[in-house]
Image (cartoon, rainbow over all chains, first blue to last red; front, side, top):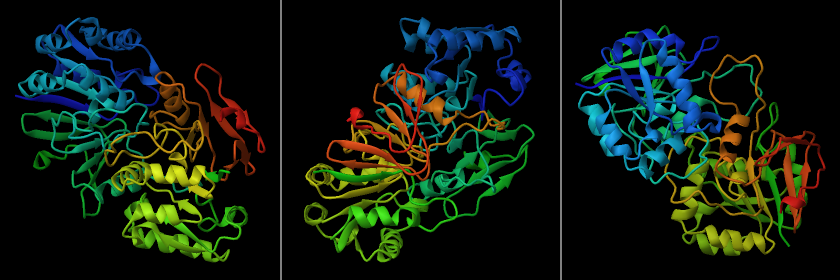
Length: 235
Length: 235
């Protein structure tokens, strides 16, 4: 049975990396000694080694070892042997390019659908949806496709931001961007604010954390959903 | 000889559509009665007709007619016959997809390189650069390529935003995103703040407007450039 945590962000303001969500990760990866880390999104362009070190430092606090996918000669085999998987944030386009270049995408989908627990933050949550159409990232590299893993049957907009009523900036708000998407596409988009996450178990999806999330569906008014909302009907 | 205005935004806070830049447009399109408008970027998903009407309203104030590219059966012929061209902002991915789908991209490059005056705002300025790698837009549709017109030999980041020191948001700043790009690519990126534009005449490029612009070059510290800076060396 599928088990995932799909988080808006790795880090909430004023706390350390993954600190706010460590108890949940303890539960998700219960009984697992070592998880596989996918460092491909390289936030701020840091190396795979540096990024894996950061993830390792956080998971050490809950007694779980972390090994980077880049440390394996055969990444498909590494995915097949993993007991748990974490994909960190950074640039979604770079992450997706690497998922295709290393040809792990179908294997990754397969193991997670078959019960290997998966944790994603930010870009790692974007790829849990159907496509990367709703990332906030800059398209710094051209991936061979915008299709992703589809662990859930809708898309995530991580780091969801409400419009600032005092802003004098004329660039599009997040809501405008998502509405533009819905003039072309009917995939629902869930705006997950920083500190929110989805807990997925089998076909059940529940909104977690203290904040409301904002659901955008084509042709409907956006809805504010309170914590503990059951989103399984979107599955 | 090439003549272009490449603007960060169509609209500055508190003014009407194109209002801040109408005197410059009068000069750019001097002696031209009608310009061709490329409405493909569809801001907020508005129709080609609606968008063309907005552009028409603004240009009417300086005695210039506007006709939408979508009004022509043969868009390549329309580009070839245009006396002046304006590409409006909206979603860069949608704009680029349409440029490729309608097969106008090489014709558009050709006529502008040969002296047909070109005005771009936001997404219409992104495509004046080498690639769309530095757009801020959401990738709502998959274009067949990220390569664009290359009227200038670098990229624009329109609506450039400085980091907000009081922000509690953990998403990447604009500067972080551009730096991530430079871990993969060496194309210079000019962050154009709202109200700035580039005036291009032949091989000369000058920064215009009242604001500084921020230049990012791979492996160098970003530079703040004052108005009237000559950027021809990037050509």
